[in-house]
Image (cartoon, rainbow, N blue to C red; front, side, top):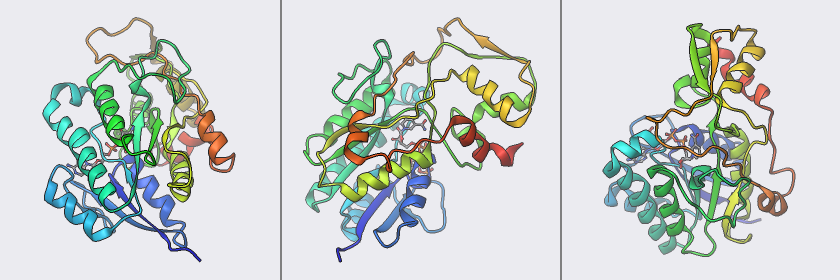
Length: 300
Ligand SMILES: NC(=O)c1ccc[n+]([C@@H]2O[C@H](COP(=O)([O-])OP(=O)(O)OC[C@H]3O[C@@H](n4cnc5c(N)ncnc54)[C@H](OP(=O)(O)O)[C@@H]3O)[C@@H](O)[C@H]2O)c1
């Protein structure tokens, strides 16, 4: 009988980190987890400021993880653009420190990255495609990936726009659309960018399988994505269908908004390496209608 895998999960109070923490805790025979939070104090999580060297050092030395699943990040492109120093401290700084501390204690890093490392002009993108980010957020994630990938066994998992269980629909760029659908006030919603909304619980399932095999599978970049292609406008229509709400007030926006932070038009991720490495059980995808029915029902 092997030892349980000790996993340190950063950003465990966040949208994805919560799902990862929950998923690994469902498998207590295999994992011992330590979930970190920062401003949100949640029972069962440990507070740690990852921009502080002392805090980070203390947590890693005390927990001696086999694996660090690094979900904490500033992931709002507009904030990264407007507050570059803050984003640099969390995205670049914390990732660099964690990589070094993980290496010192022999732990593997699993870094969560994004499809925004690509410019979206030439999809689909596989793990070998060359990143060419359009905005400062994408640039910061590329720098973090490069730091993580300096150690051969480390893993980078790129995912597209996420949604999942939440107490606040505005937590995700997907579920926030539901507020607009429900409000009934005329609005125009992006119908240009092709998105692949992916449920956090499906990502957490992938993370569990990667965690089980970390150190024994080849390191490097893996992609995971839902396979339904929808614009935000089409996501609104789907929400209307699922909950029987009119979407007559929602109009498609087909002209680009020149004032917004640049985002890729279609950064579809090809997931073949992940599927070949982990097999079908690890790579499950619920349909978008199923996913939003589950996480939005309590807001109807
Ligand atoms: N959401 C998406 O659509 C999406 C898409 C692609 C990739 N990703 C990537 O997936 C990962 C997870 O994203 P997410 O959506 O779960 O993010 P999120 O909901 O914004 O959560 C961010 C997490 O970072 C923590 N954090 C913030 N400042 C911190 C600090 N100084 N020290 C320690 N922790 C700090 C937050 O803790 P508190 O809340 O407790 O302060 C929170 O747990 C990120 O790497 C992101 O780039 C996300």
